[in-house]
Image (cartoon, rainbow, N blue to C red; front, top):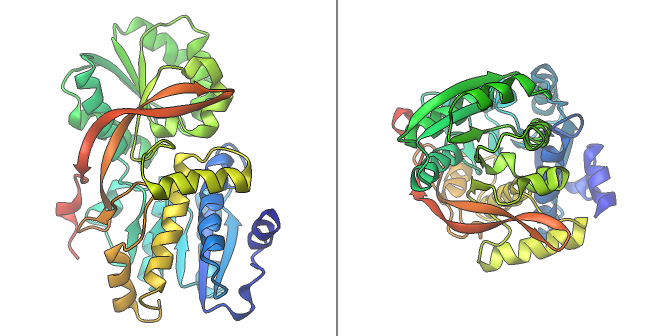
Length: 375
């Protein structure tokens, strides 16, 4: 398995000689967000390997979380490598730099993570499918959970980029209480002393934060050591499997929202968790599950059509005829999922920190932008 991934990362999957379908994966494999991209890559490649197909070549490149590099890699993949399908981007600012240009050139894009509101609404495209969520969704669910928990005065915190803006918009859309504060931080920020001081003085009864990857690790550790005892709520991105191991005890008991969890009770998810642990020696994260589902969506469409026939291939993708780790999976009219989002609590299982579902936050939930999508 590891040799296969290394070969793919170098742009030459071992079985690529007779490849009929070429997939370009641009994701974050270095720097602060590397864990997220590695999980998407590992989940995607696990599904490809399990399919035992020898006609798919996957070209994998590291965007280094830089929009300029992502655009250069996308141009190379489309113009030189002649990819049929693209995937992999984690960050919404990179998606906004790459996806519109890729789909305009006739390439299909399957998003395993980033879901900016612009691409769900007026900027939607027939060749763009999001397999994860629209950015607001998990935050909307957190707002709904905060209502049920009796919170009335939340302090909001997120990085200042498209996904951060969508995050707080989503929370506010559902939250019925007041706001004690609303702060946008720098993307990639690691020192949160000033923000924690604001939280301490705000009079808030709850803190809602969206800080994915290394940002979340830094914030949670500093918050736990600050002595501030205001309860925190977050989306799964702030409490994913990688973050939990780095944060440890400070995350125990925190409630977060997700459309997926390792304990989600369906046969596909149970098999996925078991096979991922066997292949990689760790529990899968939300990002790994999304990579796995994205690959299986692609594989299901390839069983019915070829990307060289865009109309038929698009219809096959729209059908979403695959077994998802989430159970039932379907697309809305704007090619974004309609799905149930759960509330999870951080627990310790042996020596491993993980999440367990405690209830449904939003059932069969669609995004707020579909009405603006004209296609």
